[in-house]
Length: 206
Image 1: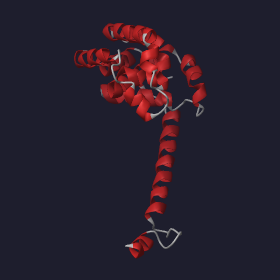
Image 2: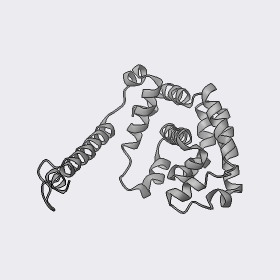
Image 3: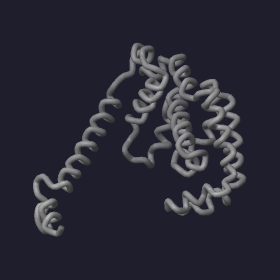
Image 4: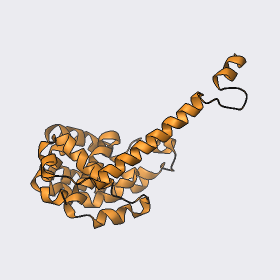
């Protein structure tokens, strides 16, 4: 067994040129390089009317979101400043996409826990603009509950996974998650965002 391990990792304390460890590191570097190249491509790419017209709703929303996000500075501390400086149309899509993705993935508790929760106060107006008044009303209620029950909701959120998981216990935001999922079935936010983009093409091709 020991000899097999030595052979696998290329000897005691030294990785061979083809060791799994070295190959894994190479793969990580390739992924990082590919992501950087993809980000640079998106940042430099100018969206066109044809791209907007020919994309499906889902592809269009992702394309626009990633095109906006790719232009952000690497310093996350400047993200809020960057978002506030965006033209209104791009700002609306950016914060709405994050809201939809976060709540769909982990509920309102996850949305407020993660950095994107700082845009919650901007969402009612954004959701109203894209034609999603029911979602606007829902986030308005969620904001009120989060403010009123902040101590209870964040009591166990100490930065650990265990604390975050425990914060779901008897969380007053839970009932809104069910409303969000029910509302998603009848009023898909992706379609609302896509429709808003198509109605405001000029704001996204600049």
